[in-house]
Length: 128
Image 1: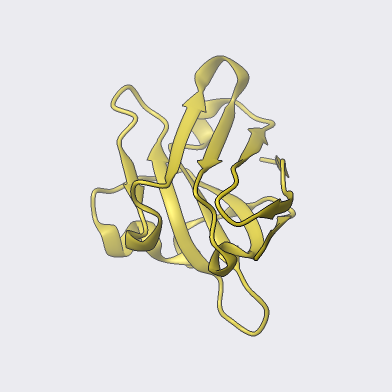
Image 2: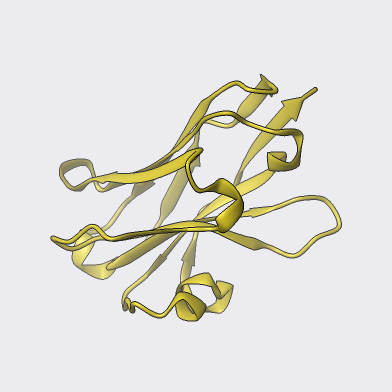
């Protein structure tokens, strides 16, 4: 599975960006997709996840709830992360990730080693 992330850029505080992650293989191989981010000097951190099946259940890091929305387009094998009301602390490289198995366990969803496939990352910079 190849994941191609795009949509990062420079935005002012309070602005919006939409990230995209296109998966190259059939969606049955990617039952769970997620976005992580990594700021300089920090570990890679969970942001949001979505189940690829009919439920499309979503999960978020507390600090982005109400500002970020993860969604998917089954026909395009693409997952999006709409980011609104951006803050300087949202500045990071954003990575999309995919896993063949899913779970309702938040600890499972939030662990980076749950995900077997990773995109190359796209840089988001929020200026104040």
